[in-house]
Image (cartoon, rainbow, N blue to C red):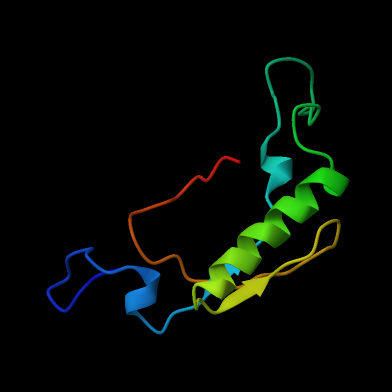
Length: 91
């Protein structure tokens, strides 16, 4: 997050912003062959959902405001990406 001088020096804890945590396990698709992506290497929902829940629990225990999405649902999410930064968190 940018500070008063526009420099990315702040963490989410230094702001009043909230976090949106949604599992993106379907983005772990392998497109090396065939016409459709394969999600064989992605964690199955029964394993992945508790991992995402644990991350959300830890973030909230640190004082973060966290909104979540749901596995296997059709969601419409509106957001504004603020930054030139994308974070990829591998678990």
